Amino acid sequence: MMNNSNTNTTRRDFLKTSALIGSTLMGPAILTDRIYGADNDAPLKIGLIGCGGRGTGAAGQALHADKNVTLTAMGDVFEDQLKSSLAILQNKEPAKVQVDEAHRFVGLDAYQKVIDSGVDVVLLTTPPGFRPMHLKAAVAAGKHIFCEKPVATDAPGIRSVLESVESAKQKNLALVAGLCWRYNLAERALFKQVHDGELGDVRAVYATYYTGTVKPMPPASQRPSGMGDLEWQLRNWYNFGWLSGDGLVEQAVHAVDWMCWAMQDAPPLKAVAVGGRQIPSPGGNIFDHFEVNYEFPGGARGFLGCRQQAGCANDNSATILGASGLGRELGFGGMPFVKGKTDWRYSGPRPDMYQVEHDELFASIRSAQPINDGVRMTHTTLAALMGRMAAYTGQEITWDMALNSQESIAPAIIAWDAPAPVAPMAMPGQTKFI
Image (cartoon, rainbow, N blue to C red; front, side):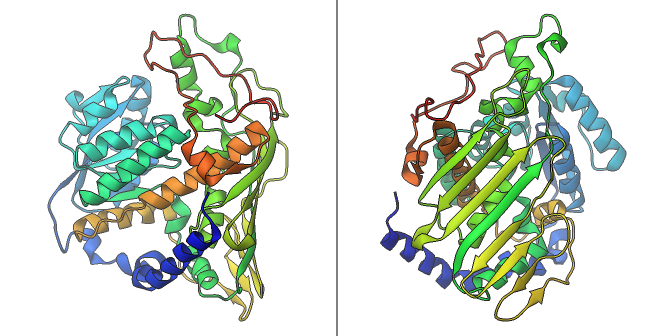
């Protein structure tokens, strides 16, 4: 666990350097004509790995982010998903979608075929259980990367990603994370207010991710005859912890990221949590609600509420409490505001944050100043995993415990004909920390 002295030094170092990177983090300055190749107009080829809804959206945004890009390769484990995605993208960007039959890859090795197909930029948008493996392969091949959140579903995956992040830095590769609120101009302005001290010292953050059921698990009676365990799990990936990480890690990671952002990305020291499965599910092994209490350096606290149940009140926001005021992040509704030393409400532009993250990715490639979100995207994912570990086990989990956990939750062999046993639902007080 990080001691207070080391953590305070880290936070002071952050403050010293934040002024140097503030224009990149806080404002739209990077959204200039550089995005259209003023510095380097060479053609860029894009490869999509994971052709579900998020992947299709990300590909469309990447194609819209730069005038001289084409989508030339696509890969997915399922052919029907690839075909559906391709049809949507061809309809939206017919001139920029140039994926011939030879570059439509299907199967568990499709990711490597996309990477090896001669693309310059890869979009990693499969279920997150595969993210560490795909990121490692993309970095090894020297590709620029858009990496959807979260980046891992267990600690061994986190450690692999941290190695890949360092390798990407050494190779001067762009690595933009799908923690999209960091690319929202309104939220950037809010957190600038927080970091500039308008609330005084941050004492607590209350963040929520209350929503309906994300991807309901169908009953076993709907499983097609002859479908193997792995395919059944992949078709319903959100409901299996090794693929999604659970709802806290896959969805509420955004709320965790707000909390980490408010704390200037100093990692939480420890966490305790409650959670469980209240609404019966016909399969899968994920919880449908969590409440996590984090302790940050200096005694600041973070409180996260997460629920994915139909028919309940929904809320996706964060309230930041400081020594001399409060700030409110209003998620998808309304504009952020501060009530502090000087009252403030954001009134500037609010372009689509999903588009901005791709705009800035390609602008950074064109300008030879690649963005690398790697450390913070990995730390935010680990903070979410830390909360899940605390809820699953009922124990207090420290940052070092979470980082060094030896529990690998994926099947030992990932193959169509290999066993894919489903771990039992966690039971706090009985499930052991490994």
